[in-house]
Length: 207
Image (tube, rainbow, N blue to C red):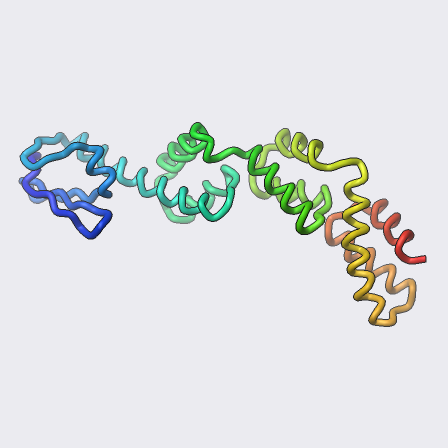
């Protein structure tokens, strides 16, 4: 088939017309990379490859927009791209390219995620592990990151910090000591702290 006309559509797209009335819609970047000009002859195979390249380009652009908002794990980004009904084979190719270019790195993501949750929300080790599993981080990466980021007294210190704040609000309700202790314990357990840590913290706060 032969190119008969090339028309720019808006700022980001180009429509290529062929002598058999076929049309090819490409992003400007894909078109420029193709080097196509008027009167060029292309095969059906190249026509199909350009369509695929254009789809891959749009997947990559979508991925960059998501990464521009915040870091993502590989599994997390894959799921978001799947939700857009892109071709799964092309998604895998894009994710591989992003990983090889260091735009995606599960260990780096896990490090940043754990640091942020420890600093801002005082999450327990158990909750951190659970959330990282949900985000598709491999067990060996989770273990390595948590071992590096969490000291032996981490759970106690974080539990104590959030418990003190909760205790102050519970005291205003004039609860009986046993009820106050039960509510504080339930609160800490819901935050992912283990029973022994909860018990120790409650004993320290409620005399």
